[in-house]
Image 1 (cartoon, one colour):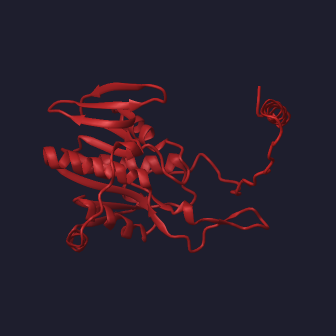
Image 2 (cartoon, helix red, strand yellow):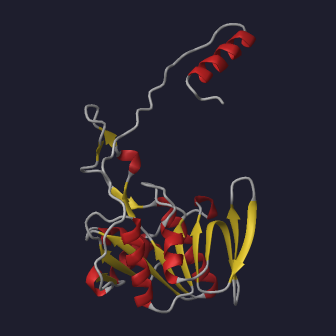
Image 3 (cartoon, rainbow, N blue to C red):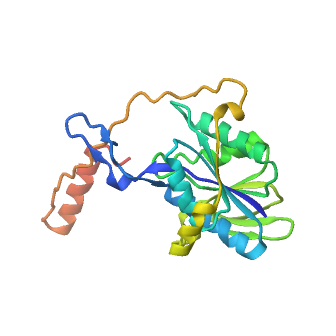
Length: 254
């Protein structure tokens, strides 16, 4: 099995503070990490490798300091990493185009694994976009994966149902957080990861034409989540009626 895991460096959203005067997020100094669900994709790739053998390549588009995040995945069990320098003002069109071009350059692959979405923007676009650009099948929201000799079977979480699908290789699979529990590498694995290669590719080595974003980010602001702290202490029937009336006035009931 030749597997590629697409991973994204993100800010730790639990550490983000909002400027009370402007409503803008304060991102300076916020710790960086690999998006949580991408670690689930990495863990699943390792499990497949342990059973079937093969190679795992980590693919990331980001700044130079993303090499430190790639090392975390190498310590978990990946064999090599590839870091693509991120252009300014990158959107999903730019990122997915670079990832697809890098995968074509890698050449031989059976499985491409991604998290269902990144924890910062949570759009769920990258996996399906890559599959479309490569012209190969995709299976999204997989909560269980079974790899067989000539095919892969996945159980897809589609809300109130679980759908079982299968595909031949190659295929793109996006996984949910419920699929597994990512392992913590040992000290020896962390030390050994320093000997694993991380290649750095630039945009020009992958795409000849000019790559421009299709979406412009105009502004980013935090959303106020203050509670009204209204307590209804009347008779239960009166309290329920008042609550329903209040929700209706707020436009929360239809």
